[in-house]
Image (cartoon, rainbow, N blue to C red; front, side, top):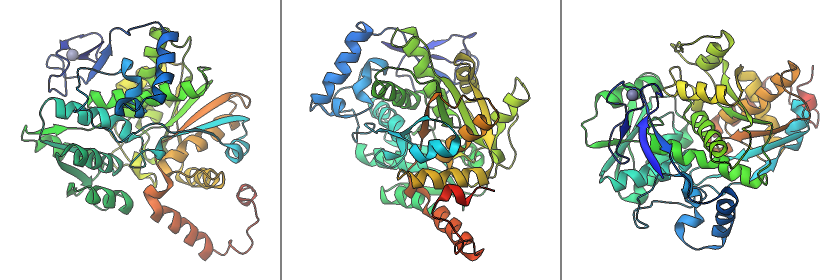
Length: 418
Ligand SMILES: [Zn+2]
């Protein structure tokens, strides 16, 4: 059983679960869904989740709705909009582990979702909620991935879709997806943060917002961690490493661990590590400086366009997740991201640049003595390799032009050793 409430625990204002509000009417903070009760004992519920894998009910076929004991409810089967999202594997990163100097590394590849990104996990719940409250049109601001995902689910639900993108800063692959799914694309001069401001300013009240501040999306994204722990046989890894952009995903993961622990599904949460790009690092900077308030990065710049965000809206929730899990926030350079991405490719896995912050971050922490080489580490890859093909081609061309291609050794790991 769930409720809609203010995320500011000192305020604690409660709203009706399906009320259309994006912020607390009393204090203005973000809203969240509260999990009040879980029906059944943990072992019983865990068994039920496994049994559902044998069912043909579309909700059981979804790697999100299969875990509906932890999701907002009240939806009819017909209004549940699903593309059988979730159900993505946990894969050992062998070469990646050697490169980073660790022994037990696993990738949870959320980029292997229907539109190639973790956003689908949240969007199935967000669009279902939009349909439930009678929305006819949905909208978001996006660095590309949210737009592609929203466009797909809106098309599935028969809703009009409007996406606001920072002009010239979105990968062609993502833009193409949004167009392919029939979205109306509005290009905004400026950054993602400008696009979001424009969207919020120009809202006519008819548009249902599906940015990451939408609490229903956070709920769907939570299930990635439930599915992952199920795949680990409920043996909790020592670390959970994820990229940090707008910090909605980090918030969702932290919330999943907190609820699983609260209701007796796990005894202890993994330590969360949020990795940002050095050019868009407001959380990592705040963490390093022991700050209490996030100072936005004015002009965020990084090759990892999916996390090129200077003013992450969900930073307070992400900070709470770090505190709850005894975690940390760090940043890595674009070059480190590029090297890590190549190694993930050599493992036959592949990902978009933002996802590679995870592996780059692990290597950095191991080298600094802040992560044990024999720890069990789970790293979340958020986007598919095909999400940004321009980046791959350009990096390859650059190397070919610089001539290092000819003297390149057979191992990419050696290639980058000094
Ligand atoms: Zn409040």
